[in-house]
Picture (tube, helix red, strand yellow):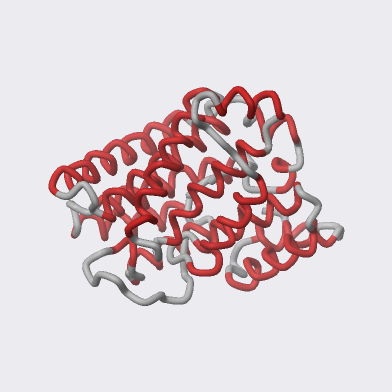
Amino acid sequence: MASLLLLSAVICVARPETDAHSPAFTIVPELASGFHLLYTQNFAESREKFADWESQHPDEPFGQVAVAASYLFEELYRQGVLSSDFFLNEKKFLNGIDGKPDPGRMKSFQEAIQLARKLARQRLAKDPRDPEGLFALALSAGMESNAELILKKEHLEALKRLKEASVHAKELLAQQPDANDAYVALGTANYIIGSLSGGKRFLLRFGGIHGDKKLGMEQLGNTIEKGRYLQPYAKILLALAARREKQNPLAQKLFHELSEEFPESALYAAEYAKALGRPIPAQMHP
């Protein structure tokens, strides 16, 4: 769900580099370190890494995308969204959190998103096919859709952002097929919309908004197989979707991999135990 967002993430096997100057499509050690901290819920430290890198590359929109992801991921975690307790609660999954998100965190998230969009559009003004610009817009729209849907509970705006993220991701993948992190935006949109009632999906088709749960899970699998920064995030989303779809073996596999990759985090170990139907020891509670 969340594209649940992008949220995105990293520390995965390096892929063939398509452009030595493209941080979104190569593994940059500083960014990889920041994403690893993000996935272990060390949010302040991850932001420091992203901010340090961004200060040295002020024209790169991906730096601000990463900063925005750190705020969104933290709020989703604080609100208990990144858990099977949320995903398996149909009311919460389709209607959002109880209460309201932290205003300061959301303000910082929105500021980073706005700057990422500005930098992306500057690049696209020079080259309408600039992959860095398209990637930043796709992830920015995807993260905003998560915030609108899950945290702010503004569903119409969320659907608009989901559609926008899908358009940018498709445009990017048409010219840069190895941009596998972009499938997080597509997969999330397809899964969330595909989870709506048949009547709601029918109405959304008139606005050009379509969804397919199975396709969405397959697209998240693309990022898991060949992603760069968002591979672990896609694993979280797919594992939680698998719990909803009663595909427990898949959920167990993914949460086991996450718990081994990030042993510092109690979140994945706890979700692995839940997927196995085992009680959660006190020390494993996130």
